[in-house]
Image 1: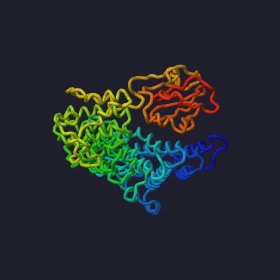
Image 2 (image 1 turned 60 degrees about the horizontal axis):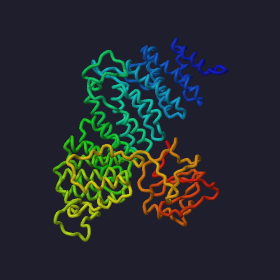
Image 3 (image 1 turned 90 degrees about the vertical axis):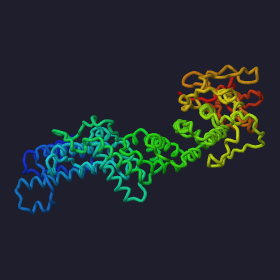
Image 4 (image 1 turned 45 degrees about the vertical axis):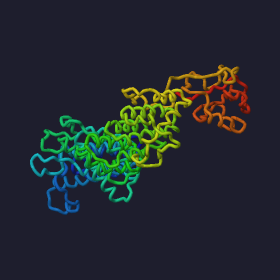
Length: 590
C-alpha cells in the first residue's frame, strides 16, 4: 500500500482502498493491502486499519456478500467450478476470517488503545454476524449466534501471560445484554476447562483474568428481566434457551463449578469466598453443589476458613446441609489471630448466629465462652469491647452456663480444669471451670473495657446487647476524640504546646481516645537504656507507636516525660528546647 506523505497519510490511503473494494469486486485484491497494515509496527496505522476493516466487513455482512454455509478450504474454492459470484463470496469469507484472527491477536497488543479498538470491532462483527448469520438454520426458528467468533473474543480476554483487567472492565458493558452474558458463561466454561486440563497448575494470571470475568456476570432476579439482547432479533421465540432464566442459572452454575473444581491460588479463593454468599449462591440452580468447595476452604484454616463460614451458613440454614463436626471446627478457628484479621466483623457476626440456638448443649456454649475469655486476656481493647458483650450474650441465652460466673456451693479450685489445647469442645472441661478472666479484665487500663467486664458482677438482663455497632469498632473509635495533657507542676505533661508541634489538635491532625497514661509494660519500654529517645526510635516530626501510645519529637519538644517518673527524659541532639511533648493514645492523619 502506498502511503500519502504527511500526517493522516495512512488513513487517506486506506480510505481509497476501502472505497475501491466496496465499489467494485474487481478491486477485491486490495483487501490484502488493508489486512497487511494490521500487522504494522506503527500504532496509528494499526488503528486506522482496524477502522477500515470494521467499515469494510461490516458493509459486506449487511449486504450479504459473504458466503453462507459450511465454508470449504480456500484451495478447493479456487480449483472448483463454482460461479464467479459464489467464488467471490467464499474468497471474501476467508478474508473475513483472516481479519478476525488478526483482531484476536491485537487483543494482546502492548497499546491499550489498539486492544480496546480491536475488542469493539470484534463485538461489532458479533452483532452483525448474529443479525446476518453465516450459517444456515437447521430448522425453522433455529437460534443462531456466532459462537466460534465470540469464543475467540473470550479466549483473548482470558490470557495466560498478561493481566487483562483493563480490557475486561471495558467488556463489562456488553454483559448487560442477556445473550452476551449467556454465551459468555458458556465460552468461559470451555476456556477454563481447556486451560486447566492442559496445565498441572493453573497460572495465577489466568486465574485473575478468569475471576474478574466470572465475577462480572450478574444474573437477573426474574425471568421478565431478560429482555435486552445485543443481537437484534425480529422476534424472540419461547423455545430459545437464551430467553429463559433457568437456562442462565444452569450455565452460571456450570461456569462456577468448572472454575472452582480446580486447585486455585489462595488469593483467588479469598476473592471467591468474599462474594460467595451474595453474588454466587443466590443464582445457582443447585446451591448445595457448592459444598465441596466450601468444605475444602473451611478445612484450610486461617482467613480462608473465616470467609467460608458465610457460604456454609447459607447452605446449613437455607438448604438443610448436614455438616459433621461443624462446631468442633468452628471452635478450632478461635485463636489469637481472629482479633486481627481483616474479616473479624464477619466472623463474629456469623459465630453469633451459629451460637444463637437455645438447643445447643451447655458444654458446647461453655467451651466457646471459656475459649473467648482466655483469648481476651491478650486481645486489643477495640476487640474486647466486642468480645465481652458477645460472651455475656452467650450466658443470657444459655442459663445453664451461668455457673461459669456464679457457682453456689461449688468446690474451691486450686487450678483451672479447662484444657485450652483440647480441640474437641466436649472434652475441654469448660463447664467445670469459671470465667475468672473476666474478673481480671475488670482491672484493665482501658476504662471502657473495665466497665464492660464488670457487667458480670450484676444480674444479667434478659435482652441481649446488640453487637452490630461493635463489630466494626477500630482502635481509633470509642468515647469521642480528646487530648490529655498534664501540668508540668504535677510531674507530668505540660498543657502548653509549641506552634511547630505537628501533634496539635488542629487539622490535619487529631488526637484519639485513650485510657490511663501508661501501663506497666509501657513504662518498662520507655525506661529502656537510660530512657533515651534514640532507644525508642523517636525522630523529629515522626510519630512512633510504643505499645499502643504515640509520641513525636517535634522541633519544639524538649523532653519526654513520664507521669510517675518526672526525671525520666532525654533531649534529642540538635533539638531546640521547647515547652512540651503531647502524649496521645493514637494519632491519625485526615
